[in-house]
Image 1 (cartoon, rainbow, N blue to C red):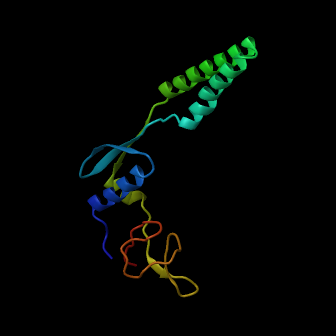
Image 2 (cartoon, rainbow, N blue to C red):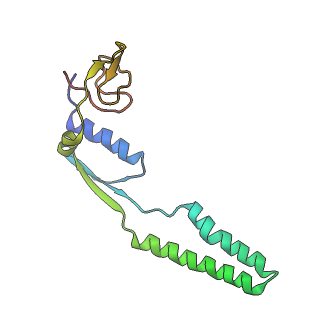
Length: 143
């Protein structure tokens, strides 16, 4: 079983990062830079801003004071959400192939007590001639 090239190792890691919401900022032969932007969820906006505004308008039909208070609360929560969004900085990482090699555990194909061929890292079934585990994606090395 052969070791992954730097490009293959980086490509595999890029796929892993982009599938979890990270965005690629730059890429080179030796590494890549990713950013995880701060995102305000639509559910938070609906729960803390839109719902109190709607309730404030509906309640103001019956009680102007209480309706105005709810509407004011919605505006205050909107301002707090905006302030939170503006003050949080996005996470930024630079990842190199050398660092990945140093941090990536090596795996071998072994046999468990039942005689089944498994990955030594995740203990899931693996094919003896595979180059990486299909489950944990760790590259196999020769034992």
